[in-house]
Image (tube, helix red, strand yellow):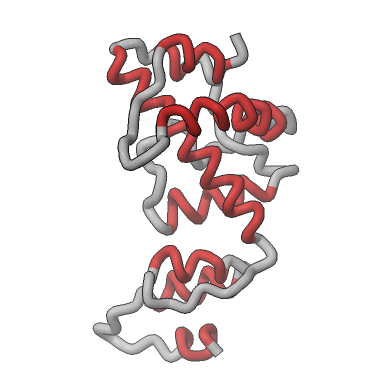
Length: 158
């Protein structure tokens, strides 16, 4: 129904009809509620992948902001975030939509890149495990605290 409505394409419409049609046509309906907050969010088969991709991006954003605030951007570079594998990883498609279609996480270098490596996702998942206690400690309560140099090194697996 959404695709049929989008195909009507009226001038001056306040919804990006082309984007809606593209998202629906490629099975990325999950992104509609990201773009339009009023859109009813429904369960989608890609929800677990979207959630994990967002968690990875949020971790990377926290690390990047922390390294920049410390004046040591090399600490972020040590995390070797180079995107997701475009051939073997559904996270790559999710990242493409989040970054290129919804303008989210555009501050993270290589967010929409193709890492060309099946080893990227396992590395990020290992980092998420190391990040969980750091996040719990730093983001407890209403304050957002940056990571220390030591915590960034732990995140990098050093």
